[in-house]
Length: 308
Image 1 (cartoon, rainbow, N blue to C red):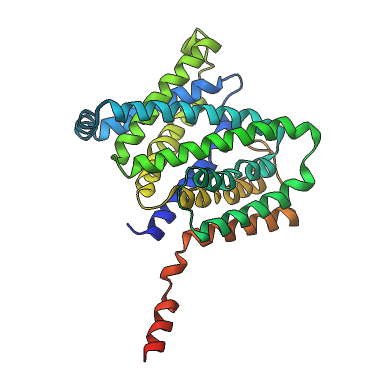
Image 2: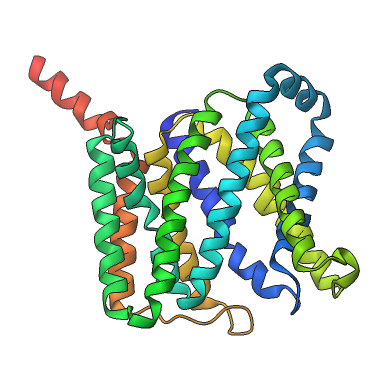
């Protein structure tokens, strides 16, 4: 797999992730947030283990405690930033929330620079374009009441940046299937712990219905099992900064769902000129990472022509 193919896989992952808000909106009322995280994580992990049991056992035994500890730490980090995002997003609609969520693109290169890791010129340009797009969209929308939500989103973006860096490093060292299994298993345990404190009756307190089971089944299979495996496999061939910029394409899918889906599923968001300009800048920044400019054919043509 080359860089372009890996980036195309990451785009598919962002499409899966953008469906999360739609699935959440289909959940029956009074379903605890952590019950969904707990059940879907465990089911997703079970699906992966059921498909590749020997591979999972062999790899986990071979890697030992260092691998398991990394899975635990990243699972806790992921659960923490997701909680911050879910609480912060209450202050925003679909469009502004999607652009706020995308601040990770700007935060991550700064974190890498602080850690004295190399960040390519293309990534800095991509991050700058995405930042301009975010400012254009959020600037006129922000109000004083949204500042606490913006603060939560900012903290969440910082933790997400740290999480992406760690996951990218893990993807280059461990089996993607085992990473997905380990992360989802421990994410399920963490969610179960929090869910128990919210509602000690756990499954007995749930409003069971066919809709709830269907949403959880789709979520576990698509958002957890499939997208995570594809994500970690693609991360083997790209940098953390590259992946984060490509993840910003999720904005475009979120805007699409907010524009075309009925109000019964999501709060409709009209595509104003400002939002379209911001989305165009995000897309342009992402394309600079998706397409490897240094490998384009015209560079080789110029060299051949010059030598002739």
